[in-house]
Image 1 (cartoon, rainbow, N blue to C red):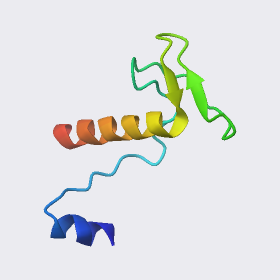
Image 2: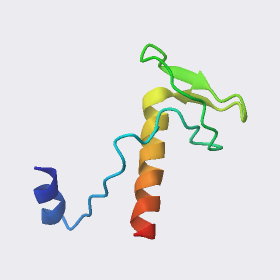
Image 3: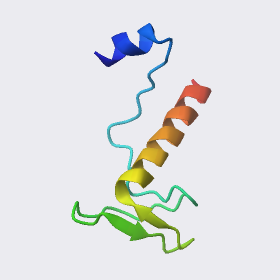
Length: 73
């Protein structure tokens, strides 16, 4: 399991909320653009014009939220 592997390698697992809107937030400027259907695989932020791949953007937001959560705990 993941906890076992993390402990084995001296790593820490940080859980973020299941409801964190990772694919709705621009990882560049932080603008929350709202829900999108799963068919939308990329989008452009209307505030900063950054073009996002949905999954890459979500992963960047998850990393940032995990680090923020870890450092404030």
